Image (cartoon, rainbow, N blue to C red; front, side, top):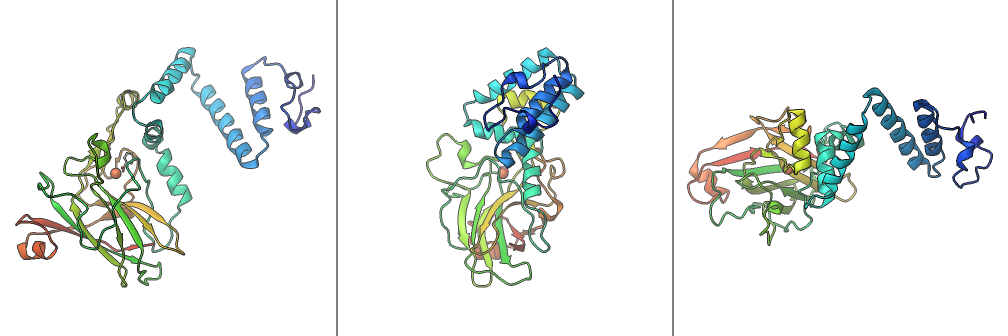
Length: 312
Ligand code: BEZ
Ligand code: FE
């Protein structure tokens, strides 16, 4: 039987999968790939076709290049099954899996290429929650009624500007960060209200400000299957310290990003390949009690003020 040059040359093709006999028998590894590619090429939707053709090609190339054994193939299936059985919502597990391979950051970077004078984007991560409370400028995002433990106060001053430097008023700036234990509120089973989150609005001159804690580096939560992968890979699972931002203004592109204080131990080996150079910001230590009090920082604790200008 002659091999069709293109899948659509299969004579019986009329939008229904062609009868299997119209494809060559599977005699060799290459004929498996050939037939799988042919079927991928018949995908009706053009974008879906592009994705499936690429996926089949890369999966087959990967399998061939690494000479995957039957045992390894089975291990891979068990690995994916272990993921699906995790107690956390599976999409978090799968997101983390793509994160540690750098795929999430790659998707983000491809889809949000650098724009001159604009703050770079970064991944949203699995800890965003849509229930951040609306806050007034200067409010705190952390519940510090019982102190902030080993953390230090952070005072953040930001400004939203167009890429040609004009202030943008009334921009929604949503922020979220870990607490003094390096945990998001979502990681506490007892969470009954948001903590470490807030939604602010820029003033007429584009400024906004809030109080929180200086973020600490924290380990990405690892389920047993992901932990076994990271161990086999001999990789740490630390995220460099950061604060998350989601900036939204009508008529402008949204910006989802993270800012990383300097002196950040993990910033270049971040577990999810975050930490772009342009997102590293300078923290200025402020030891003056009156300056702290002006910013609503309780008691005589040392405050740390962080200043940054962001554009969107
Ligand atoms: C985060 O920044 O919250 C995050 C991002 C990716 C994986 C885990 C956490
Ligand atoms: Fe985070």
